[in-house]
Amino acid sequence: MLIQSRDNGFIHPRSSEITPRGVYEGRRDMLKWLASGAAGAAMASWAARDALAQVAAPGKLAPLPGVKSTVPGAQTMEKVSDYKDATSYNNYYEFGTDKGDPVKNAGTLKTKPWTVEVEGLVKKPGKYGIEDLIKLSAQEERIYRLRCVEGWSMVIPWVGYSLAELIKKVEPQGNAKYVEFVTLADPKTMPFVGSRVLDWPYAEGLRMDEAMHPLTLLTFGMYGEVLPNQNGAPVRIVVPWKYGFKSGKSIVKIRFVEKEPGTAWNKAAAQEYGFYSNVNPNVDHPRWSQATERRIGDGGGLFAKRTKTQMFNGYEAQVGQLYAGMDLKKFY
Ligand code: MTE
Image (cartoon, rainbow, N blue to C red; front, side):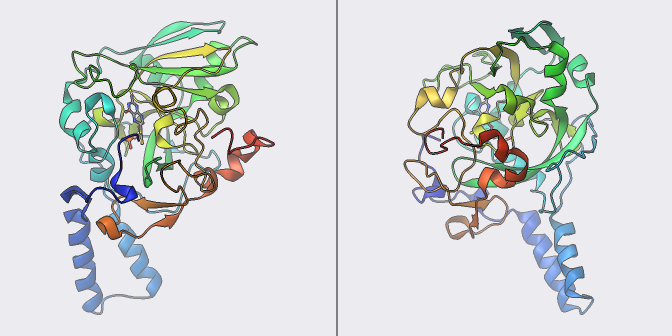
């Protein structure tokens, strides 16, 4: 984000960036296994590599299983990121600006009781206790790529349901054109809310058709369990075709409005972070290219192999139509 990122060549990798031990040991075991002559066809060795890399949640949080989603685009053949990486390399500025801060500091976040207020231009405004919100629709597992604006990405199995399910229940009025997401800003439990890094509370927004798109996920869990605090417990948004910062964590208000709402990063640096923030390899950030990305967990630190970033993060077939005729350089 505003702070210069190591992905853009300024800062040396931390030890946590070097290949995690589990992955390294997994590779070493696989090499032994290959050397032993037990390997079958090349296809089998690829499958084995994937099996070694798929690490489940450690089972310390409450289970939250979801049925395999049938929404187009909600499944992928890509290797799922290591649970450890997904839960220890985070952006959650309320708990610090370093990637390792949220896992260290977010233990203070109080997620019970939790209420989400639905307000603004809707026929049925109301307050939802988190337990009722979870039960509002069937939980699905969606395996989405998350591409951060800083140039890294992960593949995460989220659990939740389409935000559209909630929107349909609250019946937006005809003049509701945007949805605003307001997240918790509690200086007592969030040590960085007192800082001037951002204008708190962290707020985000979507155009109504984006919010209604079936891929937009109201998210309560990941890896078959409830969300860890550092990933936005107890409820967050995940919008897979947009840069990660559009996915606000620990939501307390969902507000339906007529005008495009202000958003945290746009307020902090409008020329760098637009309202739309669709993943787009053809529109560079003013300070770096967005053409490639580094998959967290692939190792290599500064010399990590980078892969080409895909238009709309690979979800063009599903969401491209939402932006037909729009100049995406202007509406970045
Ligand atoms: N939500 C809040 N409330 N505060 C934040 O700092 N960071 C965003 C987004 N949601 C952020 C937030 C950014 S920059 C990213 S990349 C994603 O959360 C990271 O989500 P993850 O840590 O679960 O991968």
